[in-house]
Image 1 (cartoon, rainbow, N blue to C red):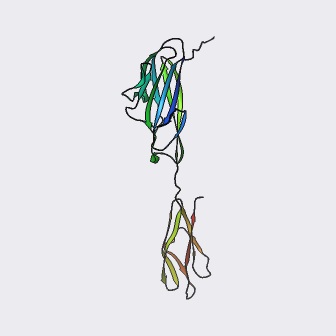
Image 2 (tube, one colour):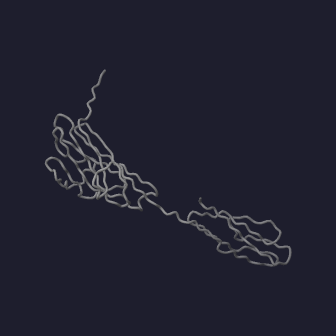
Image 3 (cartoon, rainbow, N blue to C red):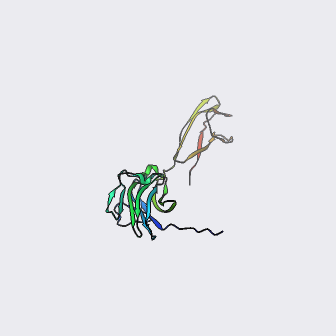
Amino acid sequence: VKVKVVAPSFTLQKYVANLGDKSWSKNITAQPGATISYQLAFTNNGSEQLGPVVLRDELPKGISIVHDSSVFYNPNYPNGQNLGTDAVTTTNGVNIGNYDPTENAYISFKATVPSADQLQCGTNTFVNTGEAWVGSQSVTDTATVTVNKTCQTPTPTYSCNYLDVTESGHSATISGFSQSAANGATFDYVVVNWGDQSPTLMASNLTDQGHPYSGNGPYTITATAYFTIPS
């Protein structure tokens, strides 16, 4: 069984530009929070009139249309006509009428890029898809916006804050120990040297850790904290 597939006799080009650019592109790099412009360009490449033509633009998550910025161009409106609606980015799109062979039409509109606080660190890529429908046939095209966000990596900080020791006869008890770690640094453990010939103590919590001494001092007790620092 042979099935004849009829290819659409129309095309759609999807473009994007930064405000102030003198030409349209398939890919741009924009600043966080910037306002950009999108364009849908429809052309009837066939030998018969086509219509009604519906144009639609599916914006990626995070990109928002600027209200009442959609402008429509065709042979009847060569200088543009404000659509008075944001429907081009809705599910049903915009019906732009019928077009004879070789005729074309455009819709351009403005949109905003997410602000820096809404972006991930590094490269953020936004691809949106334009669609043109005539009856049951459709064509699509895409344009890409890249937004870079530079994040400052905070310097890890860590410290031993205090060591409290209580003396009682021939024994000493650690009554308090404090350390701090921030910006990616993490506390692992502390090693206590009791100041005599006994083995050191390794622990993650020193509260109420006691130690007996065999004779009179003086003894110097030290605590050395160990931290993990991100590379």
